[in-house]
Image (tube, rainbow, N blue to C red; front, side, top):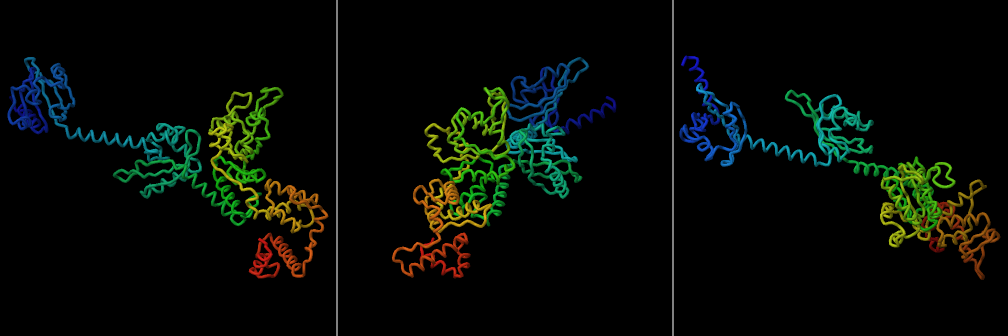
Length: 580
């Protein structure tokens, strides 16, 4: 052996002894021919001449994981295996050694990788748990590149639930790339805010609008921060996006409601065309405000003539749909055989006389409000079709096959007991619950008699338009009207006043009847027989006080001032005369 060979042999020996694992050579019959110091230290003896599978792995036969045939065919093989006896993992490499006589030996290098394998398994499990967590979060976990527009390069599967887009659709520069579906009015502010906060190395958090795959607009809350390398350079953004649409809509609704409340608080004796300051009407006003801030279906319960359509119009005028049509439909006035064409329209040739296409109530109400008065008169066939429209399915005009859709809000009204109609099978239960989301109960006029003076003055002012001077009612007429029960409610009051002003006759369902001659003399005092001076003075005082109260619209402070009386004195005299 020359010096060079000796040197190489020394190098090889040093490498073999320094290797942190087992090195051994086996003959073709699996007998050990050479081992390094690691094997001797592990076994406590030199195992040369023994079968490798028996001495090293405790197997009486050749190890099932050993690819010895491939090695003895001249191939170098590498593999990992778990020793079923010890439960430990090994990385194994075997390569053939060719001898001058043509015989082959097998050189094996075996390294215990149990700790490394456990770390890998822990990492795999950690990644699996993280992936499961990310993909089941109610939102989008994301990572964006640190380019000009922060292009998204990873999105979790929550994007499908939140926006209707698959994760890959949000990545890159495609038509549905994330930056493209952010609302145009919010996009610039969002990017500017991210740049500013990341430059200060602070987390960012903001709320903005985004377009879902359905085309609907959603409000989302994004929270994230920048990722920096060792040199302090921004390399990515990572964060989370969640749906806050429901919370944002509630917030916006509350803002609208507060604005409307502030604007109306100083004038609550009336609400638009609705007159009344009673406790019952104040509750109705509050419900109108709440209903106008929402887009849910409303149903108004109330007796005939109580002002249900006025309430519906007030809700429409205060809502976001006020620029759309208010389509009022008296369901009880439509013949049942015409109801379908009136609601859904018809196409030319759909029936005899259909010479042109004609839209229905639903077409007219698109973008606005559909007011269905006497909702209890709609038959079940139309209820089913309306229910499909309200559920977003759409409708088909008479004679047509193409599905149409209309975006409208339903406000219904009735003076009937709908629960009885449902129990009696005349109204579908699902239709009932679909229209009865926000109920409003209008009190009858007999339950809010304190509003009658206001209503009388309002209708007198309306009737006086175009005429010289204001109109006044005699005290006896006004007292009769204020004590009457008004079964026809506000409508009856309006009609009775109109008849009285026009014909000079007051007819309260036979309770009182006054002619024009009676009205002419109504200002004269009719003294009861045998009345003395004191009685006549008391009657005159009562008349003067009533006149002052009427002129002041029953504002006691102003009436006391007009009479030049102390407020308490006026209170005492009103009590003495039975004036309430």
